[in-house]
Amino acid sequence: MALEIKKTFDKENDRWVIKPNGEIDIYTSPEFKEVLLDLIEESETDIVINGENLDYIDSTGLGVLISGLKKLKEKERNIIIINIKKNINKLLDITGLNKVFIVKECK
Image (cartoon, rainbow, N blue to C red):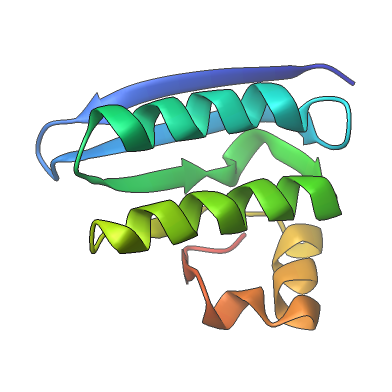
């Protein structure tokens, strides 16, 4: 499945929102990584991943999130994950990444 990535700036909360649509896997994670790292380099804000339309993420996608978080932590910023589906929330729980990322508003 293809991946579409929408990014918008939330002026009210001074942060970027990335809304992936589809799957983040070994084939689509390079595109996701490019978008994420570009935003990290060009701004000093938190980044919200809105998982409302994210159907699946594999270990390569999780690796991208972890590398992005490491770069943001250097700037004392965070990745906040919202609106994720139960299967992705379960994956974050099993891997312990729900304790590494700020996870809110699970569906």
